[in-house]
Amino acid sequence: MSAGEKAKAKAEQVAGKTLRKAAHSVHKDTLAAKGAALEARGRMRGAKEKIKDLFKR
Image (cartoon, rainbow, N blue to C red; front, side, top):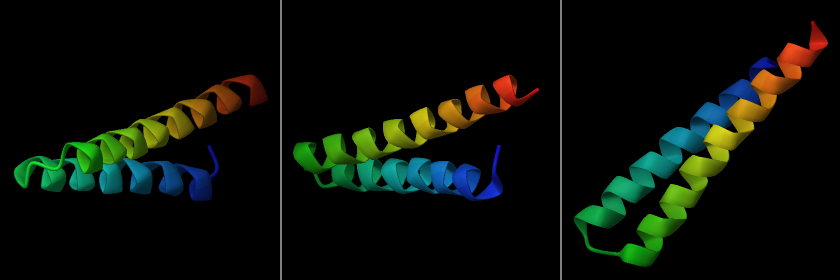
């Protein structure tokens, strides 16, 4: 997995989780949903990179 893409995936996961937790604490459901989506996008980006690495071998 390229280091840049791996870092981007992890950053999206962390940012999404932080946004989701903060939004839940102030009862902002739409913002919490956006945070969850960002976190999911980061997980999907990481999974995509892992699959790409499998096929490189």
